Image (cartoon, rainbow, N blue to C red; front, side, top):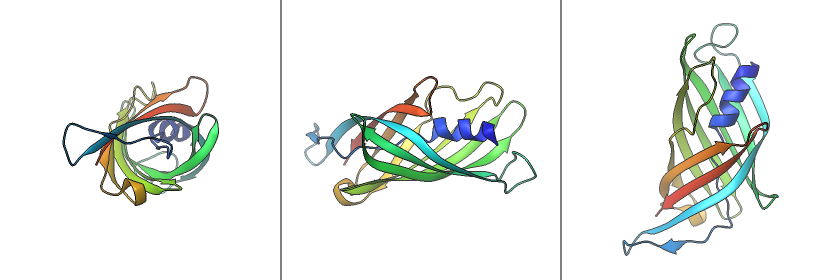
Length: 160
């Protein structure tokens, strides 16, 4: 399932960093911030749940390290599951929890691609909630794969 590793490594790079500063927004009760950091995929487990080989229902569990200035500040753990797989289209759904010293965030997203081409661009990732410092936040995440690695540059925009 090497192809599956490439798909979820690129799609699942959506964590956050604890070192960000909150800045007031135009709305009196909302705070917004944009976070920048790097992630690296450290562990994957492929689970063949559908027909033998890559097929709908198969999952990949993953753990990514979250890095800021080369230092580990947390991790991202989650799963992606193939919903549809044809010769020209792969669609998967992913969810993950980002764990940091001062709280956690949950995220969900779907991605689709041509399996012959591989991942293109960043999936639309929704930040669906948080705990601790991140309680009550929502937002979006975007990742830019770093060529030749399993690493990515990540940007998250939070409101809350």
